Image (cartoon, rainbow, N blue to C red):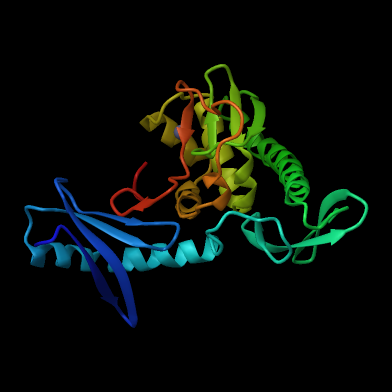
Length: 275
Ligand SMILES: [Zn+2]
């Protein structure tokens, strides 16, 4: 097949899904659904066109599912400008930002709106500070509550009480150190509660097993029998805010255990099945 990169359309049911096919030296077909809803397929150059197209077609249900999920969880791929009408996600639900001029006050959720009062409505930095503070406070309250809940379960299996740290991380939802400290990404508060609980239980499990061994997953399954379902939802979530430049010093240490949000792409071979 020549040239090496071609634009194609995948037919699936009533849907026509445009994608870019690129031939590469890779040994396996790799399909990536981007946060922008673009689809890229990387196929081994040594395979025949018929085989490649057949393989991509067989992935059509997965691609369609990923596109639906991206659309559902990530309707606004552009970074926030902190103006009225923008969508912000909290516990898996969307809220519209409403910026109002007035005496500065903490951001507040009312109905489907996130209200922010600032002296100057056009001061995006001031609005952002209010929104960021609100997210941090919601994260602190929510994570502490679910940590308490799952620690009760974990304690029955000999899991000790950790120290909880919350901060912005660019590529991970959570991490854990052998010293007994769990770090959670503040952006996790944007995901549904059952996903937050999964990340917390996962990290709690690492307090006992500092690896992804069979024993670790055995413990996880005993504490949270439906963890796989929760993980599947979490793996499909892509958060706009994670794409923003990292602030401050590097937010992760190499020794920590981690589970990643798999940003910026979902890979056909790796998405829900890997563990
Ligand atoms: Zn882990």
